[in-house]
Length: 305
Image 1: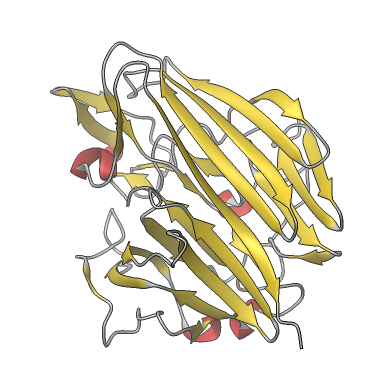
Image 2: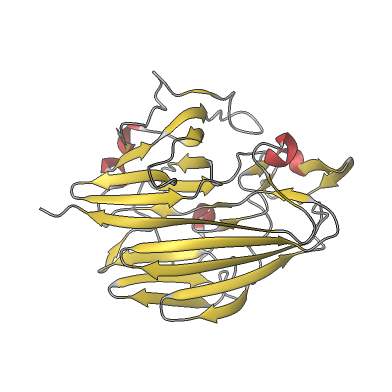
């Protein structure tokens, strides 16, 4: 049986290490000094619950797997059978072309063309680069067609801090709006509301053990550096999932089981929320031949005493 994630590519810099996969160009491992900061899985396994995958040209769900482009109905492949939606884009199971592999960086490319329900071809690149105590991920998308097209980008990593149980971590998200999870809806979220005085107020940090989330946060507040910062912390360690300003949404997902360690937490930077192909909310529009670039990353900070 073929490896579901293809060839595995290792990056190293100092005592930092990452593993990136050929199929999906996904992130399978990230550790520093032998301490894991990403929930990993075996190379011969399917990524559990989309772990580490690139979500493009839309993150999350498109309702009924249908949307309209330039007045014409578009029908995507249904990839969430239980709800009848198209979920997490078109590149997760594609073999990406390796462009460059150095000791501490790697770049891939893939084309989105001749896909059911996607009318304009895109060329997309991704670059992973290790820096001291940090992994930086840069996405590029170019419109290869003759007409405008709007799209979104997301990513689906599950984070950890070594062997600390997920429920003992503290999560901080600087957001003032939320789309709460609603289990029984085809698009499982409710109306967007303020987080103030609700269980979704994570501005000052909450213990993950008290949270049950598959929830979209918006109206994010950037730090002084102009980036968004979503934090997991425990003791002297803070894991900072940062994103540039185009990544104005973040999905937080806390499944009860992922890789045998019990509860997990995904922190998913996104440029747009669920069903953006239909709503148009925060899609990135590219004219013919135009390109976009955006970055996010994860940095580990250790408090020095």
